[in-house]
Image (cartoon, rainbow, N blue to C red; front, top):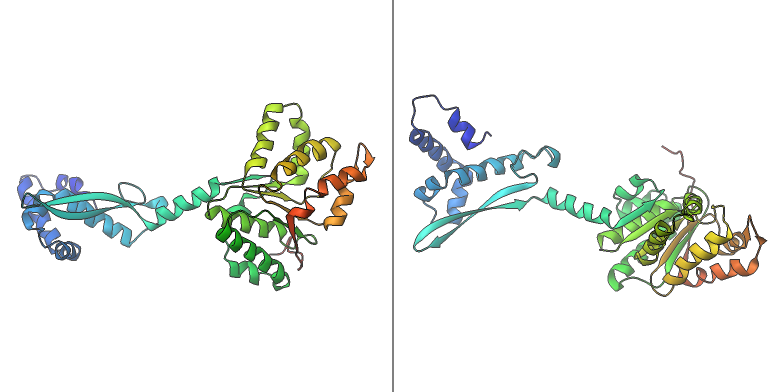
Amino acid sequence: MESLGEMLKAWPAGRSITEQAERKLAELLADPLVGKLRDKYPELDEHTIKINLSRVYQYVKEYRSCSNCPGLDDCPNDFEGHYTLISCDSAYGYPQLYDRKVACKKFVARQKEEQVRSRIRSFYIDEKALQRGYSSDEILTNDLERAKAVGQLLRYIDRTKEQGLQEEGLFLAGRFGTGKTFLMCYMLHELAKAGYSGVIVYMPDFVEDLKSLMHEPGKLKETVDMMKETDLLIFDDIGAENLNPWVRDHVLGAILNYRMQRKPTFYTSNYELDALEQHFSFTSKDGDDLHKGQRIMDRIRPYVEVVMVTGENKRGRK
């Protein structure tokens, strides 16, 4: 539907604006949508509609557009994702027409999704895994072998929504490709919708980048502080990184020391806890150091609920 201005400009020459307006008024008065509006506001008479012709026309035009919505990106309304809403009230004994712009459901849904995404930071994680929404039924039926792990995860999400941030996080252990990262991304997205901030870090790439950050103390501090303060911190594929003493003791240790008893930390790993302790006890520089490995694990083991993720390897599966 063209705009009222365009419609009047296209009218044949020689006809008065009054004649054009009268015809458009007659069309609007015969429109079922205007009829419903007058039923809702009995005081809305022809004169009021006539002096507010442009507003009523805009209301009808945008209602028609929304009824055949082409999607937000192709929204034809003047204000993308919004439509005109009309109300009527009496002032000094005369009806007064008011219009306002109202956000449509699709626009509101997009805003909420953007707010969710703004609460999540990822380092070296595929953004698609974070952006795609999944239902709890879908993640449960995707692989019934991991149903027990999914049940633990869903209960944790519900507990956090009901009680607030938990002291304990989750430690997801299992073979390659069983969907541990996928489950953590689902949890992060669900809790971001509840208002919590989150960071997920792919450990092998993160550790390599940390080595270069040794020479950028300002950027290093900013990164570490963010991981200390975020509501939900996930170390993905921990145990697969090429560890050195500085990363273990001064970066990872500092983050975990700050977060324990404050905010939950989460992990995915191909190692179980005892094997992970052995991993932390050896570095390429110092060799075996059981004390240092135990010290890190003392900041992990008491603060996690272990979730064993079984199932088939889904990597490369179509």
